[in-house]
Amino acid sequence: MSQSERQALKAIVVTVLLLAATTLLFAQSQPQVITKSFTPDTGRPLSVKIRGDGAEIMIEGAARDGEGRARYRFDEEHFTASLEWEPEKNTFRAILDMDRHSFDTDDEEHESELKVLLPRRPEVDLDCSLKAGVVDLDGGGLTFNELELALWAGELKAAFPTPSNKVIRRVEVDVKLGEMHLNELGNLAYEELDVNGFAGEMTLDFSGSVSMRREARIDLEIGQITIYVPKGMAVQARISKLGFLAEVDIPGGWRKEGRYVYSPGTSRGEAELRLDIRGGIGAITIEER
Image 1 (cartoon, rainbow, N blue to C red):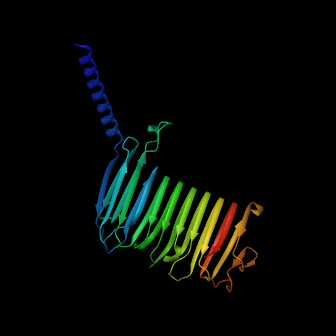
Image 2: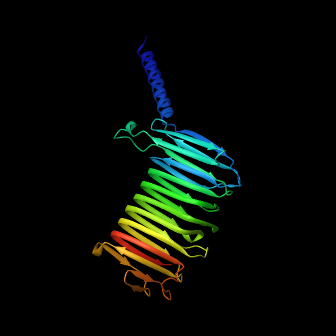
Image 3: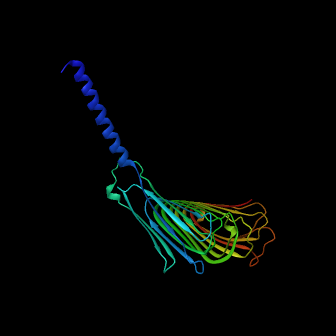
């Protein structure tokens, strides 16, 4: 075999090996996708239960009534999942598990993304609990019967851009470590709202067009609490803090009586929005807008 023939053969072998390696790497890097469609009984509440770890979860309303869909995109080397529909219980259930032992210290982030489209009918009992990750809820067009969101570490965002007059007796949101942003809470007809955290940042926006008396309990041990209320709303807030370790900032013109503060023209017991705010180390800010 001549020198030129050997070089040509070598080039072919190298090319084949590179193609094989590229194909193998591409196959290994491709995420897996599983889906589930479900058609709930519109005569009773739809129960949605989500449990997971290390995932990004997006929940929003579907384009049409009566049908829901879920799509989970994930790296099967590190994650396992189960999407189940139980028609007899009118329940959709998603369980997303992460194998932490499969991760090397030098590993980059691996994909784990669940998107759930909920039908706009019937009413929804949503119970979403995540150990670590991101929860993003767009409640526009959805009607909630019960609402519970929990996250041990990460970021939780929930927005309610369209009004719903269905009365929710209680809404619970808990983020132990991380950020929480709740927007347009005034479009939910809840009687009681419980918001809890240990360390991080909370932002609550009470704007919206559903008029009713509401109560919100807000508790954060370490970090920043920022509350936005519509200008002119009758607000009563009881503020508890850890001495000089927490700063409190309220709008100009608000009246302070002991631990209570009142928006202009508001007397005790007459407020449309009653806040019970408990802050440890950090800052508490109330703003009108």
